[in-house]
Image 1 (cartoon, protein in one colour):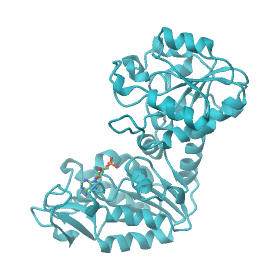
Image 2 (image 1 turned 30 degrees about the vertical axis):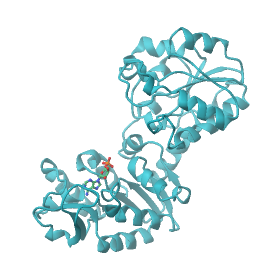
Image 3 (image 1 turned 120 degrees about the horizontal axis):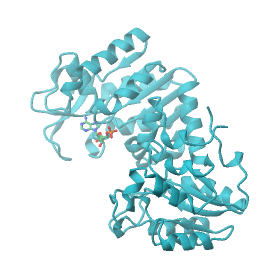
Length: 394
Ligand code: AMP
């Protein structure tokens, strides 16, 4: 069932509480190093301004674990937001305290304020009802636009919807549209590329994608569990011995469903987990005992590329190697560059694959880069996201 958005409700001149995902990366001096998530919130904020709303923004930042720790303050976000909007963003000193409430009460139509980090209160992650009610008491309408936190049932992402009419913002609407369309109505061939460290994190998504895709390419650390499941040695490569059965089941399911599940044919191995470690490329059946597989090899890149070039829809989640070390980033970067050139819908599922695409300067060449790693994975798994479920049905 589709959910109401800011366009489906009368919010003219009203006080609106907006949950954003301002969990942005910062350097040691608290300079924001990637403003993507702030920029992603702008269309909703602008729409509310056009409708003469008084806007109370809230978000989490990092994990202050229920304490008022200044290093987790959202002040730098207020500053950046004010720069982007070209207007003052009033910063509250607390979340549901005296300062926040006084500033919210005094807020006029067309003005914007930001509450402090909602995770300064443990009640946020506990989804405490009293805390949610206090948050709600400052506004007349609730808008959730924090896709990156929509898989969490927290007070500001879900609990608050019990006390206010609740709708989605444009970011959540766009995420659901892009991810939903790709999964439920893909132009074929539909290819999924999965990487990342662990099978256990992604087994749910492997299982659900096997119901939908034509081809599934598996790289990254999780490929070694699949190799091991077939009886091959993987040296010191990352491998989940307790997940061999799951890997076997996935391979059997792929066969039964007629899905091409393609594993690497060669792998770049390193001696040690170090950026400048000695490395070489070997066939995946010949990983030496004391070496570790850190990237897909050239033959695999070619093979994956052939499949990707045929695709009309591609979903990618998880790097294909230890891409933080340049010598093991070749697989991930090659696939990112290829995705930037093909004539297909390209959906990047947030997290590390999104960083890889952005680092390579290719972000604007993709159809959609999700702002939520965990949330997009859970959505692709077919799970219900509490931050979406709580909103009013259309
Ligand atoms: P995930 O959060 O599951 O998407 O995993 C991302 C992490 O997996 C990144 O930090 C990658 O460096 C890491 N990774 C990918 N391939 C490998 C590999 N072959 N060995 C070790 N780590 C890997």
